[in-house]
Image (cartoon, rainbow, N blue to C red):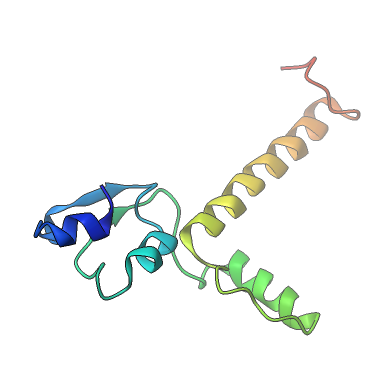
Length: 107
């Protein structure tokens, strides 16, 4: 159910806990920030632009005199940064342990 439908039907949003995919900033924006007040959500990635890696990304935009997109630091963006970091670390470890080229042959 959407946040708007829950609200429209009088369901108290503070009794709803959305797990991951229903609890991003875009979900709140779609419902309307005022409508979504009280809605609870749980994430497996941090939410905020204050993490060091996110601050580095913001600095990269600023160094290139580009506007920082609104979504930098939002939960789905941060999750993408997390997944990318895991992939990079996996490749780094593969190179360290097996050398180049990295293939699916070793494991």
